[in-house]
Length: 495
Image (cartoon, rainbow, N blue to C red; front, side, top):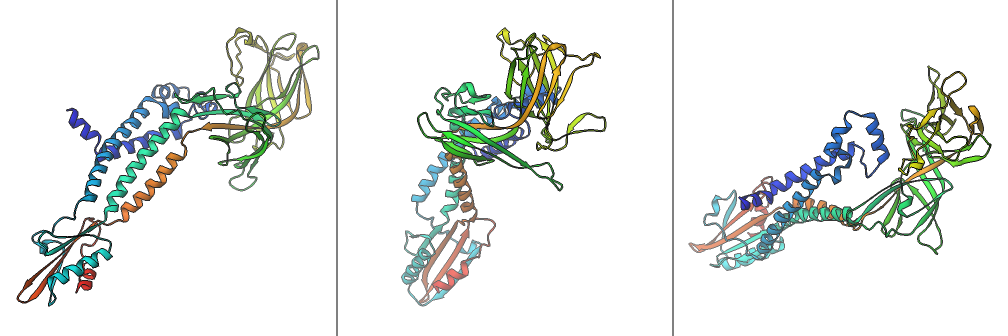
């Protein structure tokens, strides 16, 4: 049973089935947000699909590529390819050293057969046959009886198959190395600020089981400008047109800073680490004064986009405000307008008419409990919504340069200006060139195997009635080719 199971696992049919299964298993990773790639999108998906989320969690759909079932398919495919390709490679190596097979006793039964007679000696005919076939890149051997020539070519077909599957094995190994020793982290950097490549600076960080997160390259970067442009007309109005980030990067302490420009699919590299631009957004610069008139919060606050119009949600926490802590939650509207019901909306993703809509909460933010909180969400358990004189919730709607006073002597909120932020992904994948090289070699080998034609040719000469009877037979080992193709040329050249 063990031997039978091993043969089934290492068969080419099983390897192809596992390869197809792996491709199908990777599809959910493209359709469902992945935790290690975009945790913000995952959180948004959970809020939008509360009934579906528990089932997806059970199946590991938010971390498809690290789930047990995906890893099982991956490892089975790796074992199957090793067990399938290695024995075939040894067999192919023995075949390369073997002599071309002897001619069948009845050549006329082959699908491509021709015969003619000549007054030349059979030794001369066979010598000419060797020269002609060698010129046609056949591997030639004289039969043991000396009355026939055996030739064979088309070894590249099997070599292409083997190289193709060996390349797939190289791709799997390269991806595995990158997953085990690589890391990936996301960080939001606002215009005018910077980032140091340390664990504490990341918004989210994922490392392989064998990666050493403490030995990150000590580079720093400063973001000077983030530019996002959008289509302004036509059927694609509002769609992203270009994203670009510019600034300076210092590879290591003590070294000079170099300018950089990052755009989509054009990262900046520091050794084996690459910095990609994966998103952008807006960070309203807000100044908050408490009831005593003291500035208790000032600076840009990233608001995360929620839809294609870049309506962004965010939170501002003010633990040092007096007489009580404040929490502000709301939306940033890049191009503010009002819908039919009079509610503020955004009609275009570019910041043409920016506005900030906020609700204000008062009370205990829970920051003193020692329990970590997300900077993008507000824990309202110890908070009370601030209300106006009519008992309704206070909703601020500010544009750049405007200030709104809060009731009950809580202070004021000023919307100073709008800054943009870049969402950067810092990733390192050791031997990243290996999977790419394997894929290129696999494609070349596959094309070579498709166009190579394994063929065998036999030429037999014998003397009869004072003349030499010559028999020529061709066997094409591919089913799609005409079995008689090339036979007439060989016969004509011999005759």
